[in-house]
Length: 350
Image (cartoon, rainbow, N blue to C red; front, side):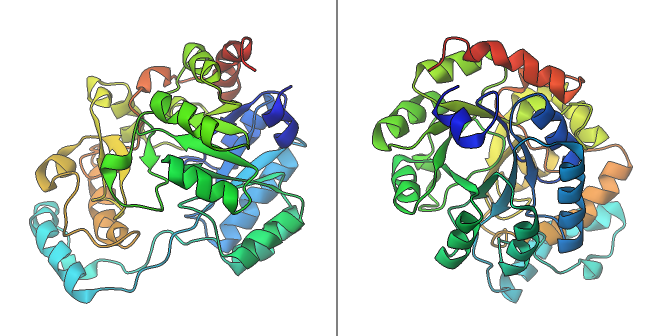
């Protein structure tokens, strides 16, 4: 037991990172039942799907679990910018034989709101986590009123201090190695983003709440390194991408087992916000950071038809192949076994 396990109510200070688009309740349940904290990402779920997934977790485990939400501000649609983005994508639509006039509209991801809180209140999860800061104070206080533990991601020391000042119970120190979306919210300057093992001890020194290390941790040795630097626990995502319970697509799984997985980059061409994924054709040809990309999450709509077309043809050239910089832990195993293999790293931790 340490400060984090006491806070979370888990056997082990290990959190399975919420990974939108590649998992549902099954992965969260498996990790929870292995003694760690399983997580359900809700940013891409409709209210009906969210309720169904939460019900599945409640039916599958009696242990604490984490429910994760985004806290971004929805941008106003910008017709000129979206038209410019479609111009960049026009040749790809022509190559695929798709009608660019049929591009769907919609945000793809929504921030935590009252409708989500209404559903969540019926389940009152032990942990609610946020990405891109925190929700409005009234929503945050509502979550706290259920007795839920609140955690959020910080990518800089300033963000960690900000989160502590606004009442989080623990901070996730997200190093630049981490796969998926950067949790950055006080800046959009990518030069501020540093590695986990540099960021972690600085955040530990800057805040008084437990700090959870995230990014590049794929095995027990990585866990031990994070704990030696003062972490109260770790969050692991990429190592679960090929687990039996994950819903990671066939092309994504295949990419994680190739040499290509060792070349990742931060890109915003898929969603409009920096996220780390395996470098593929569209990232190379458009540039991983293209100024024409619409604001998050509006960029998702125009890329979706291309992704669907090429994945149907067995290609991940237009897919967001999210992955951290250390894919060595990706194995086709049950999530419980992956969890157990990480636990020896805690034996010398505080």
